[in-house]
Image: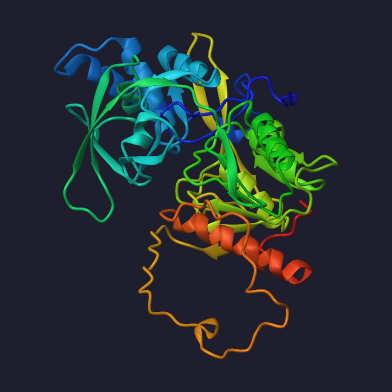
Length: 443
């Protein structure tokens, strides 16, 4: 079992927006100086608004509700990932940290004011129902989502296992909404799967980053190498919404034997962290292709960016989500908490992917490969009368075993083809480098 760098490094896989979270700590103390002086006039205006709502609003609202709503608004207007967490939300985060909660298994976020699917989690009701990244959720049961906060939407979608929920979604490129009915279940899935795509070529799927993901990656690589020599490896991070920062760092460390993996920068000294690879690596020298798409976010982008910057793998697919910020969970004295964005993370070359994403080295869009049927009329030299015999006395060789890359997964098939090409070229193969404008890695 790998030792965790933080006891409270919390994933945000709770049907909320993808986040990287750092250890909980007390709220920072303001520094002395004019910049932190309280704006008296604005506070007086706040008090005036507070009093007028109490006196004139059509329904009576207690002081505690008004103040909590004000704090929610204060956090909610900063960025999509900062939030005020009441006791219920704090409990939901705790359940997610333990890797078990009742829900449908999707990552959602607010984009342009609309509740949007970031990624479905593998082997969950959402994945089985066919939900896709960028689907807009218009209604949750009978409740329109246009006036819901992110946390309110999350609370509506969570629930007791076995209960049903109806989502009305609008898919990109379609004009008519779809209605999907899903049955909630306990969301507790293994985050790593592996198999052989073809003799010598392994497939490693990481669906999210949980506390045990790095150990599961190690076990998967042990199993693959025990069954045969690896000539190539596909690491599939498509629709991986992120999770625990430590886990992504440890998986990167499995394929890197030195150097920087990721670093974070914020206003406070304890937000400035650096994570580097330790000596030793798994699958040393084995060619790698990493698959990403618009559902690859946060910790998945850290891993892809590190392997890309260090020229350890070819990144293939489509541009990733672009979640490049870090959140700290800060407990409050009343049992509630804050989830506050405190830093941005950077890849080894100094790139911030915030709102930019990881650009693949080779862009391959999702598609379906259809094999043309043989007409039976094809003729080759071996069919001609009086042909010359092959001097080797053989009609040719047949490859051992067939490819298991599913034909319906065009991106995966292209990844396998590239790995085979890299093996043919051997030492002459060149892995694409990141853009020339990337900042230096010496920071």
